[in-house]
Figure 1: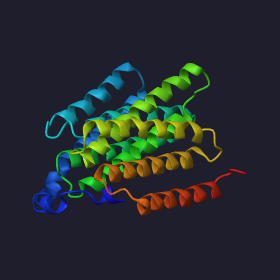
Figure 2: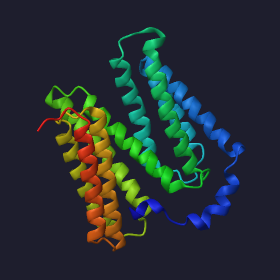
Figure 3: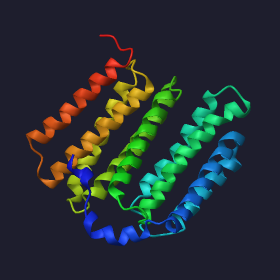
Length: 269
């Protein structure tokens, strides 16, 4: 998967390494902790006010530094929205109450806080391996988008359509941002066509996988794998070096992972 090797790492190494110090990390750590704390309070307390406070805090910390704000804007939007949605679903699924009932919410908030910290880090050039961290953030967001779609109450046609549409736009934004990040010089029309096509394929896979009895965690992991494979194929296609070995390599990875997922689930043929 050539796109995971990144670009211009050697040229940026000296400049970025100087910033990889504790003083450079501490502001982002503080912002991430505040993000997690306000998210926990917003979910536990509930209500419009605390939800507004959470989104206000997230937007303030992200846009306080306008440096490369538009490069990872879609990831920020999706991260903030799904941090609130996923943690809300987790809170509703926890019926214990008391400290034990709030513990999953706090843990989930910390997880999203870590993602927010990483996002701020690559946005402000705190980290050296920006491409690898960006892939980790994207994969995590694909995972949470899938989980939210799988566990959401979609009994009514309107509810299914709403979550389907939300998932489509979230996937489109993330795939677009990923392709633009790794292949910014590729023709825009060609990129847009491939992005829309990839999103349609992923959303179809999302609908099909949701009815398979493989568990929502396995299903979400499968969606992440499919997205990364499609992105890799698009990357090599735009680069002009897509050939049979690359396709076979991706297909082999997909088949092996499918066999592992089906073997560890309760799916019966």
